Length: 63
Image (tube, rainbow, N blue to C red):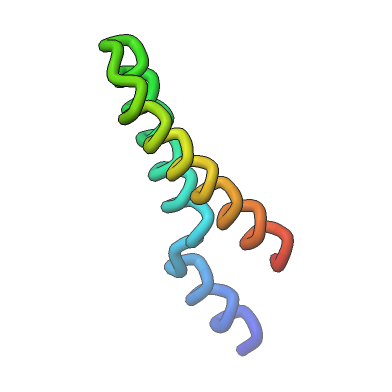
């Protein structure tokens, strides 16, 4: 019966995975903002991405 518990863990979503996807998307948006010359938006998106990265690192540390 021990295996059945492990089987259900297969369907659990990894919270770090979703945050990593969000992090990559923010970096892409920041890059595009920088290329278009919108430095304020670039700074805002970069800050948001750093906050998401911090959450990812905290989750991985706790694992």
